[in-house]
Image (cartoon, rainbow over all chains, first blue to last red; front, side, top):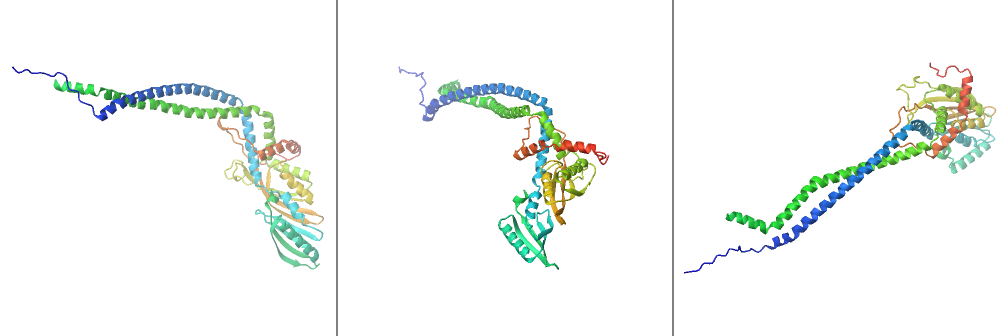
Length: 185
Length: 243
């Protein structure tokens, strides 16, 4: 009689390389990511909690300061209105021209025998002067003075026109010039 | 029966991989549903906290500055500055300024011409000065005096001792006896005050060097009260010419 044998143990199949690698790496990744999550979550909770407390403290500080400021409304009002008015005065005056300085410089050009009958400064800051010179000598001196003034840049673009000799031997002429910006400030 | 056994053996064979994957999936789920909303909230709290911190700093600064301000000093400056730049057209103070200029500079005012324009100070057709909320009153003035007197006149005009005036052009004619006849045209102004204050956390405006100088000059002003008294004592009629 032939004897039969039965193998009850299941034959273990060998894992592939990939499975072996996954079996080693995946648990590590799982544990690390779970730990990271737990830590980050706890940190975020702590952060929110702490910041909430700080936020509440800042909020109450802000409310208290707002109340203190409201109590000083009269000071704030008078200060703000004063400052606004002063700033407006400053703005309005910033474009003003110093005619005192300019007129002084223009009239300095007069001398014996040289008279300015009419001096005008227009909106574009052009200076126009009607000059009467008593003689050709004084006129010559005056022209020399103008050249010096032009060289010193007090006035620039100096032009003379309409030189007319009158009956008394005097000369009438018109001068136009541009004052330096320093003169107008 | 055999199939079940196969599944069990498969599960047993890959139990580590399955368990790890389940943990990873759980972590992903938790990250999206718990950690990310938490981080979002933390970020919001941080941003709001920063804004609130800035606001508190600004409020502290404002409160400190307000505590250091002398109410009476600014009230005086405010009243004095009203003589330089009044709230309304106030032609009386304009006339008073010319009277004072005449007195202080020794010029003779031959003619003053204020272009009244629209009489109402609240009219929309009033002309505003460039870049400001102030309104313009065109003025024209003719004066006579010596060279020195006219220079003094111009110096006083620019020194905040009366109504603010800005001259745009000038014409000077020489008269016999070294007397000059000068005509100036320019602008004076008035500035209706704003009626509302800014929000409580808006910073207080600060003055620059130039504006500090203006405050000092205006604070030195004794002209205003004198002028008011002079105007009140002289028979100038109504304060508002158009009432």
